[in-house]
Length: 308
Ligand code: Q46
Ligand code: ZN
Ligand code: ZN
Image 1 (cartoon, rainbow, N blue to C red):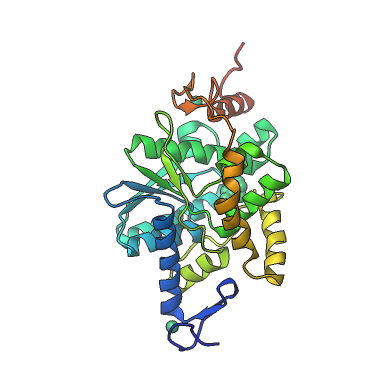
Image 2 (cartoon, rainbow, N blue to C red):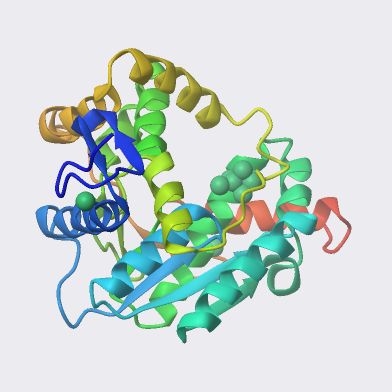
C-alpha cells in the first residue's frame, strides 16, 4: 500500500477517495479537508472570535488541533454533564490537551451551575438521555458563546454524525429539521450565535486516525448513557452500506446539502423568536426548552417546588 502523494509506505486507506496516505500526507489531507469546508461554506473569516465545544473525544480534539495548525486562535469550552466517571475522564483529556498547547479551556459544570446532571434530567422527563444531553449542550454552549462575545461556535460533528442525523430525519420526515440541517447555522435573533461544523468532510475513523498519528490522547470509552441511541444505530447501518459502496455516506450528505435542503426550506415559515420568560434567552416559545427541562428536573429531584 503506497501513499498517493509520495509513493512512500501508506499508513491509512481512505476508500471513498480511492487513496492511501503516509502519515504526513494524511495529516495534510485532513487539514486540507477542514480548510476547504471552512472556505466553501464561508464558515468564518480572519478576525472573528471562535469558540469550540470540546468533549474530550477524538472529533473535538482533532478539530482543535487542525484549526490551531491552520493558524486560527480558538478557545474551548468543556461542559461537564454529570455522567459519573465518563465526564470526569473526558475532562482530564480535554484539560491535558489544552494545557499542553497553552490553549484556553473554560469548564462549565452542569450539576454545580444548574443543579442537575444528564442522568437526572433524563429520568425526570422520562426521555432518552441523549435528548436531555443534546438540549443542555445546545443551550449552554450557545450561552457561553453569546456571553463571551464570540462570533462563531464550532462543533466537532463529523461526516458519520451528519449522515446519521440526516438519515434519521428522512426516515421520520422531520421537515423542519431537514430544512435546518446545515454545516452553518447563521446567527439569529438577539443571542443565537452562528454555529458551524468544519469536520463534515471527515469520517469518524479519519478523526480517530488523525489523533493517533498526532499523538493526541482522547476519551475512547463510549458514554455509558449511549445505549439505545438511535444515531449510533443509524451509523452502523450506514457503515454497512459504505462497506459495500465506498463514498455512499458522503454522496448522501453532500447530495442533500447541494440539491435537497432548499426543497425543504421553500415555504417553511421562519419561526418567530422571543425572549424566554425564565432566562431571557432567544427561543421560539414562551419558556425555552432548557428552562422547562431544568424546572422539571429540579422538581423531580426535590430541589424546587412545582409551580401552581
Ligand atoms: S454524551 Fe450525551 Fe453523547 Fe452521552 S448522553 Fe448521549 S449525547 S451519548 S455525544
Ligand atoms: Zn506521502
Ligand atoms: Zn430559558
